[in-house]
Structure formats: structure tokens, C-alpha cells
Length: 254
Image 1 (cartoon, helix red, strand yellow):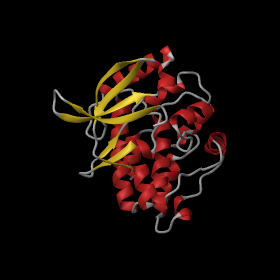
Image 2 (cartoon, helix red, strand yellow):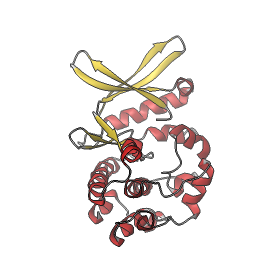
Image 3 (cartoon, helix red, strand yellow):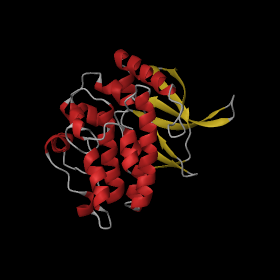
């Protein structure tokens, strides 16, 4: 991601492979950010669900530059939706629906536990070698948003503005429906090969999330039904009141 790097590691005590996410050194120097990063990691560790990448541990590595926070997570042998779309193009509607329906279950579980993901994007959804869907990085983006950063800074650190909800783009408070919108953007991309909005800068993309109506997926890619358009466009409603109110509602329609 934009705020950390991930290493494959071996837990010698438990004899298992794990993924270790290390915070970027320049971010780690901000003590308040560091505390938030740790808090979010602890929150994420409470989420125990088959479609959520498990968080095992959090700590600090002592380095000459000072302490570097890290999170130890379940290692998933698989590929992200971002990789799949980049290398193979759009998924079949049937496969896209299956994958996003599973992601809905993960998000619904986290929302029921009071955790908003805030950074739902193709790079944060993996498909394992056994075809299981795994969503990762719950709540970590909140540590950035709470720094009082602008949309541009947040997008730069998160690494994208293409999946921001209109309320995130405006800097307003967010709830579960923000994740529904972002997942709608992901569904749009796995169906068509492109996110709903693109542009030269995070600001131009953020503006489109707030102001522009998305082109229906079927107009971007052939073979998509009006029913599927309806699900995507409902998830992408500008006003949260007009969206699916829960990820479970979205899953039911899928």
C-alpha cells in the first residue's frame, strides 16, 4: 500500500508463514500517527472471519532511525483483484458477483463490529490459491484520515482516489455506506476493467465522485445485464441515503 511495505516472513515458534506489514519510516516519525496505526491494528485484530485477513500481532522494531511499527498478519498465498484485472482484464459477471458477494460478507461482519474499512479497493481484496476471498487492511486508512490531512494527501498516502466515496472526497464523516460505495467502485472495475472515474489528479477524480454520474457498466463492457447495472449504480449513489444501507443488502441483490 501507499503507507507501508509488506514482507513474507516465517514465524519460527509456530512454524508458519506470515505477512509482516512495516509502516513507512517517514510516517512512523509522527508519534500521533504511530499511536493511531497501533490502535487500528488492535481493532482489526478483533475481526475473526474467514473472508478477513487475520491480524496476529503488532509491535515496534528498533532501528537506527527510531522505532518502526509493524503488523503481523495471516499470509495469503494468492493474488489481488488489482493484479487480476491488470493481467487478465474484466472477470465474467458470474465470477465478479461471487467475489464481491464474499467481500460484502467480510464488510458486513466488520461493520457489525463497529469497524469501517475506509480503503476498500482492488489491491485490498485477495483471492487465495484455494479461491477464497480475503479482505485486508481494515481501518488502517483511518489513521491517515484522522491526521487532519487533505483529500490529496490522504489519496497520495492511500495511493488512490478512484475508490473514495463522495463523503470521503468532501472530507465528511463516514459510515458503513461509504464502504458500500467503494465496493461498488470495485465491482464496476472487475466487470468493466476500469474504475468508474479516472483523471489526471486525485482532485479531478474526487470531484467526479462528488459531482459526475457514472456511465453504466453495460455501456463500458458488453454482456452486462440491466440488473447488474442497477446493483452497481445503487451502490454508487451520491447520497448515502439512496445506496444500499448495509453490505448485506448489497449482497442480497447480487
